[in-house]
Amino acid sequence: MAGMGKTSTALEYTYRFGKDYNFIFWVNAQTEIGLSSSFSHIARNIMPEESSQDQKMNTELVQNWLGKHGKWLIVFDNVEDVSLKDYWPATSHGSIIIKTQRIDAVQRATSDIPLAPSEEEDGSEL
Image (cartoon, rainbow, N blue to C red; front, top):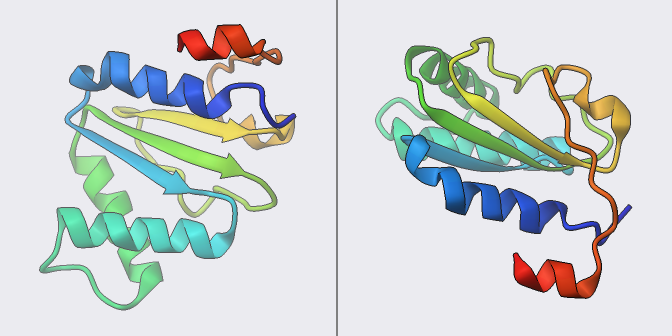
């Protein structure tokens, strides 16, 4: 359900715990194009010499980089009708937040925090 405070909660988490991570990546996961563009953007920022115009190659570069580095956080923002399979890191030394309205999108997660709709007053406290 829209308006439940998913974005506010994720932003507040990154604000409060950002110091625990060396890297935080916010990924547009609403569409396949958004996912691949976001991963290409990450590749250009963390590996400018190795990144290319090939978005699939950039996704692989980011996946390899994530496997070699720790203390990172990826926020998959607004997961809708896309599969995260090709973008899900094959490593366990980072953290992932999935923002979605779809219960089935969190099947790879080790834990989930369902949010109830928040009152306007509660949201303003975040």
